Figure (cartoon, helix red, strand yellow):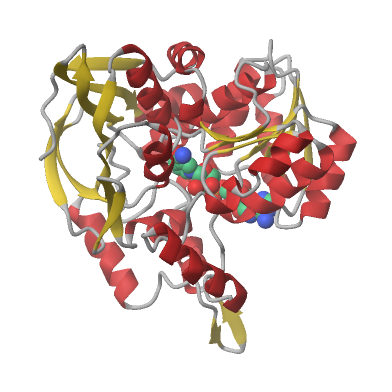
Amino acid sequence: MKILIIGCGGVAQVAIKKCCQADDVFTEIMIASRTKSKCDAVAAEMKNKTKAEITTARVDADNPEEVEALIKTFKPAAVLNLALPYQDLAVMEACLRTKTHYIDTANYECENTDDPVWRKNYEKRVKEKGFTAYFDYSYQWDYFEKFKKAGICALLGTGFDPGVTQVFSAYAQKHYFDTIETIDILDCNGGDHGYPFATNFNPEINLREVSANGSFWENGKWIETKPLEIKREYCFDGVGKKDMYLLHHEEIESLAKNIKGVKRIRFFMTFGQSYIQHMNCLKNVGMLSTTPVKFEGKEIVPIQFLKALLPDPASLGARTKGKTNIGCIFTGIKDGKKKSLYIYNVCDHQECYKEVGSQAISYTTGVPAMIGAMLVGKGIWQKAGVYNCEEFDPDPYMEALNKYGLPWQIEENPVLVD
Ligand code: NDP
C-alpha cells in the first residue's frame, strides 16, 4: 500500500515510524509537510530500519491544489492527514478530486474565528447544534454524499480520543451490552516533563480546547458549562489519584449520534494546578487569542507567538516520565441486568521514548492513526462516505491495538464518576 502522510510533527513522526514497522502493509510512504527538512530528518532516521520506500515533499496543505498535485504524482491509496485541524477540509477536497481515501485524527477547526464569513456560518451552526465550541463534525459530515458518490472512504478522528475511545464504545456495544446508558471518557496523563508549563500536543489546538466552555450530552441535549467548571477526582490504574475536569470533546457528538439509546456522555481530562494557573494567566493577558495584533509594525497572532516560546511537544519524549491511562467507563443493561465496565489502555512515556523517540501522547495518537490507515487501505474498514470510528466493526482494530503497542484491559464494576 502506498500512503501519503501530511504533517511531520509529534503525532506524524510516531505514525510514520509505526508504518515503517508495518512494512509488509505500507510498502511506499511519502511524508509531505510545510517544513520539508523535518520530513527529510525522519526519512534519514528510518533509512535501513524498514523495507518501506520513503520519499519526502514540501506541501502547503491549506491549498487543495497543491495537495491534489502531490496526490496525482505519488498516486497513494490513502492520505493520512496529520497536519492541524485547520487543513482538514482542504485535504478532503483534494482527496475528493483525486478519488483517494482520507484519514485524520482531529475534526475541522477554522484557524481565524474572526473571519466574518466563517463567523456568520458559525452562529447559525451554534443555534442548530446547542454547543458553542469552535469545532464540530458538521463541516466534514457535509462531505458524506460527495465521498459516497466518488466511491471513497473518509475515516475521521482515528487518534486515541477521538478514535480508540469510539472503538472501545463499539466494542462494548457489540460484546458486553444490550443498551449502553452512560459513557464517561477519561483521559489521564500522569506524565511529568519537568517544565513549569508545556503542552503534550500542538499548543494552539490544546490550549484552545482546554480554555473553552465544557459541555456534555444528556437525555438528547447538550449542557454547557464554564471552562473547567466541573472537577472530579479519580484513582487511575498505573497512575494514582488525579483531578480531572469536564471538557467539550468532539467524539461526544458522533457517539451521541451512533450509540443508540445512550443517555449521557461526558469527557474528563486530568490537569495539575500548575498547568491550570499558567493557562488562566495566559488567557487573561490575551496570549491565547487567535486574532492578529500589530506589534512593531508586524502582524502577529498571540497564540502562534506563544507556540514559538513553548517547548516543542515532539521534544518532550526524553524528559517525560510516568504513565497515561485513557479509556471509557460504560454503564448499561445486559440480559436485563445492570452492568458497568472500564475499557482502557495504560501507556508508559519512557517505553514509548525507547521505541520511537516520542512521549506517550504522540504515541497514543500516532499508533491509532497508523491502524486506521491500515484498515482503510486493506479494505477491512472501507465504506464509501464519511465515517467515525464507532461505525465500523471494532474487532480488527482492537486486535491491532494489542499487536502494535497499545494493549487494552477491561475492569468489571469499576468505581463510577459521580
Ligand atoms: P504538531 O504541531 O506537532 O505538528 C503539526 C504538523 O503539521 C507540523 O509538522 C506542521 O508543519 C504541519 N503543518 C501545519 N500546517 C501545515 C500546512 N498548512 N501544510 C502542511 N503542513 C502543515 O501537531 P501534533 O503532531 O501534536 O498534532 C497533529 C494532529 O493530531 C493535530 O490535528 C492534533 O489535533 C491531532 N491530535 C489528535 C489527538 C487524538 O487523540 N485524536 C491527540 C493529539 C493530537 P511545521 O513542522 O512546519 O510546523
